Length: 291
Image (cartoon, rainbow, N blue to C red; front, top):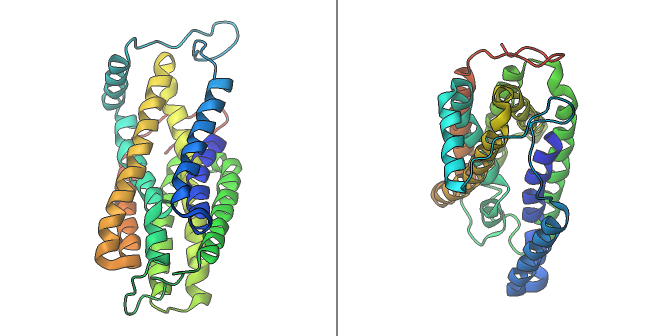
C-alpha cells in the first residue's frame, strides 16, 4: 500500500517538476499534451483494471465485500462507517491536513512563487528561478527523488515503531522543514538549516506508510466494507490536495514563500492535534501495538 501511495504522490510531484520544462518547450501546447496524458491513463485503466468482484481476501472462508448498490448509497454508507467509528473519524483531520500540505508544495503554487516575476524584499527564494525553468525542474525533480527514497525507506521501517508515534513524528517533521525553509528564505545559515529541512522532509515521508498501516489495522474490523472506507479516504485525499492548493494561493499572495511555509505549520498543528486524539487500537499480529 505504501508503494501505491508513493505512486500517487510521486506522480503529482513529477508533474510539478516536469511542468516548467513542458511550458518552456511547448507553451500553450502543453495543455493538449497533458490531455493526451489523461487519455493514455484512461486507456491503461481500461486495459488493466478488471471489473470483477472485490473481496475481503482470498482463499477458503474469504467472503466478497459488501456492495453499496448505487454510488450515492455506497458513498453515504462509507461516510457513516467512518463517523460511527472513533478511530477512523479522529484520524480524518490529520489525513486532510497532511494531504493539504502535499497539495501546497507539489502543485502549481510553488512554481508561481519560485519562477514568477514577483520579488519580495528579504525573501531570497521568491522569483529566484524566473526565466530559469530548467533549474526549477531540476530542483523539483531532486525533491521528488529524495522524498520518494525517504518514503520507500519508511515503508520498511514503519513496522518497527508504534504507528501513532510515527504519525506524530511525520506531521511534526513537516512543521520542522517549513520552519527551516523560512530561515533559509531569509538568509539563515545553510549549514544549520539545510540539514534540519532534510530531517523534517525525511520524517514527513513516513506519514503515508504509517497512515496506510493505521487505516489497514482499523478497517480490518469492517472487512466486508473495507473498500468503502478506503474509497472515502481516497476521495478525502484528493480534497486535501485541492484545499492545500487553494489555500496556498491565498497564503502565497499574502506573504509569498513564507506564506506557504506558514500554512504548512498551521496544517501540521492541526494534524498533530488529530493524531494526539487517536484512541488506542488493536494491532495486527507481528506489528507494534498502537499506543
